[in-house]
Image (cartoon, rainbow over all chains, first blue to last red):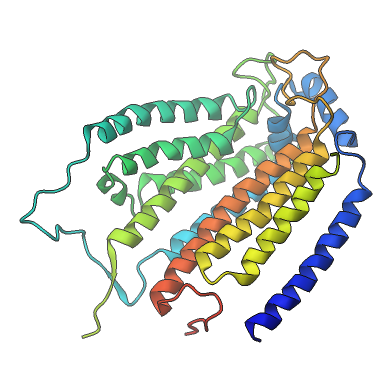
Length: 253
Length: 114
């Protein structure tokens, strides 16, 4: 199929799709006047029933917590697939990065860059942990906070200390933490089964609304997800970095 | 004016699909896929918006305020997480393919070896 035919076909199909979508959207209720039944239901029931104040977290980890379990394992599978693809392949070899020009002095990172890395690393880490732990009270949660924690390690890379990230290989703590995060979500969900309740029932004490230790399992699930997301993104950047710096194609000689 | 968010949704989806259909580089393909996917975020959020609505967090916001739909916001969160990791997987695929065949063009023959 040549390009012109392909593009003509695409233009026709896209115009048809766009027309159908516009027609479909015009029969939706007017923008800003929708009132889904679940909106009122969640907003009215979350405080009396769950002592929760953040509706998005309550929906993600309580009302549809079982969905989030599946979502967490999509993340787990995608990261596992990515790491599998970024391994050393059969016809490749690993070579520790060596100084290609030993006669020249290495590039010294500017003090401003180093300083920024040193200052930003702990603060970003702290912010990430805060966002994970307060996910059920303020905007945020395990997914958002986990990405923030991983970003803290990206500052290590940006400030030129990427050698530290290369040490993350198989059996590193991060890969165990990722598996542990995914597993503990499933385990916390399975705990109520021991006392003959259904899966993911909120068993823990609900506490006082608005306090750090409240809403039962929500903070625990947030922490599990935060640990998994943070270690998944750290593992991914380490794998991409190894791919660029360490793994070389074997010379066929 | 009321139809604007939905028109932007359609525009983002079609532009993303155009990028997927015409690009000559797998990296651009992943970016175009992300553009098409972001139309999903916008659609979900516009479906859940209520006029003068505020964030669905009852802690500091007085209970008299109207709040937007939290269900679709949670769905958008799911969508973003899945999108980010699937992009990482596709980029890893593109990287390996470039090493095998020396090309990033999705239209060229893929290297098929058992």
